[in-house]
Image (cartoon, rainbow, N blue to C red):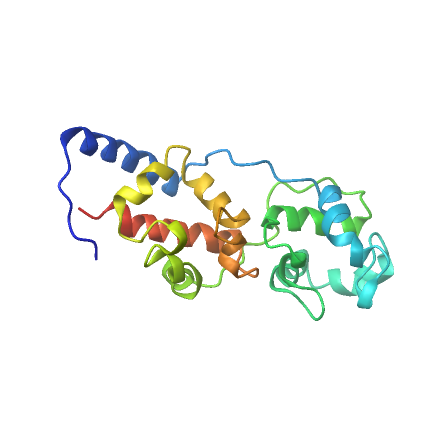
Length: 210
């Protein structure tokens, strides 16, 4: 637990403003982060190296015979497999910075051969536990002690400068990686939902400290 720090009135005023903004976004807001790429863009840049020619048995883009046995279990299951990794396919296609929505769009593109419009939300919300669970499994390794400049859990003053653009920007940074922090904290199978839960938990443990 952090040792309480004395704060001047102007700092307290800024603290309350940031606190209100942050928790308003956590509850129901959405700050604009970088736009998710189209399914075609993701397939061309990430998936095509295997799914173009069917490397190691990967279902080929637009090949109905390849996709039908897999799609019959539901698109949500396809998304889950792509995010977790399956057989020789690594989690998130080997690129942890690919978002859940981008994975969803890539699946839609490959299953339909590009004939289906890009979905506007993921097929499923994949969760590996609570925010506390995710922090214990991944984020806490650096954020407990402030390794490599990571804002420490419980250090309000370390988190406040990171909040002006909103919580979604913090989540996007954690998904894509930032400075010394690898994408998704180095665990490629974590979903966007997991990352949001972890960031929310760390903020709740930091901004509420006196």
